[in-house]
Image 1 (cartoon, protein in one colour):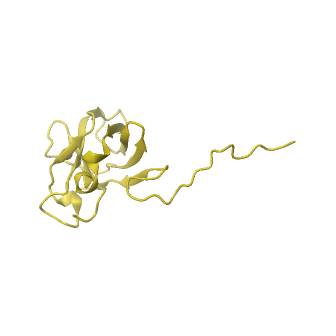
Image 2 (cartoon, helix red, strand yellow):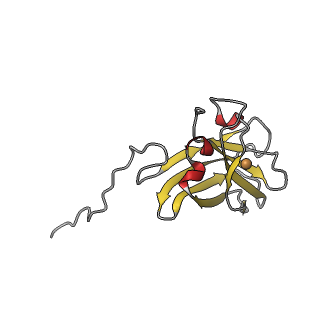
Image 3 (cartoon, rainbow, N blue to C red):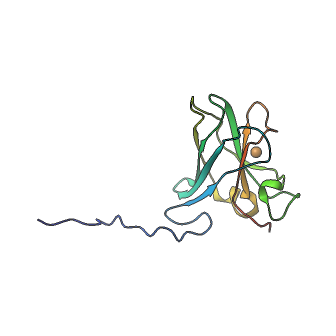
Length: 146
Ligand SMILES: [Cu+2]
């Protein structure tokens, strides 16, 4: 009996640089210094696809059944080394989404790479849809401005 191995499915993973590579790049959300959704956490996986760059947020610890919005933000003026504290403008928005009854949520944005290249895609914020000034979590993507 012969084992059929691999079948051409072997891919090189693990050596991806920014937003490249077959396996994509995963960024980790961190909690902002506020009291909103204290257990909120998650990740953002960025992959190149035929329709552009896809970014999938996998979130947990949100308020069950609450509506959220998320955006890529550009590096802002308030910091050059902490994108999440830089207060930058929105580059591109994710589709609106709602946490499920367990506080989990997943949402995918597909966009032109040009819209999130370099400082344009410095970080990803998750906001309350009802009050966008409340930002429980932020995923830093580009750590240094410029
Ligand atoms: Cu935002």
